[in-house]
Image (cartoon, rainbow, N blue to C red; front, top):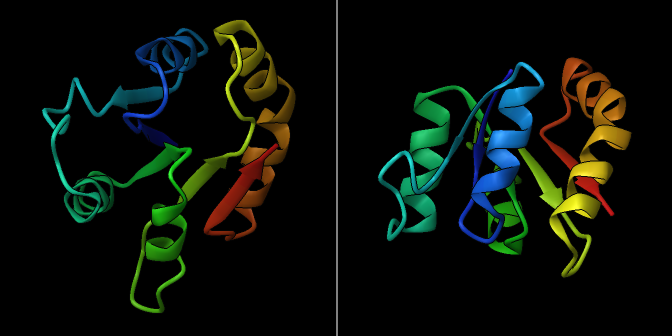
Length: 109
């Protein structure tokens, strides 16, 4: 699986996932820092990346009938990077199994 981390989450999350062997970009590294939500979705779809975001707007875009976007919706509130990384490590088996089963959205809370 390939991932794209949205602006509302730290670049360090992309680095954390890369260290664990995942192909992960942050929107800043992809040149999408000022891009619209639609542009971010198009990039993620074109690159076959799962979007990791806290932005609820992406949830609505992902749930449109014509959308192929998949996303991890992070609902942890404001937290330290260590807590964010721990949550991803804890939920990773669930994330993998949900996407393998064809889910479009996986929520982390």
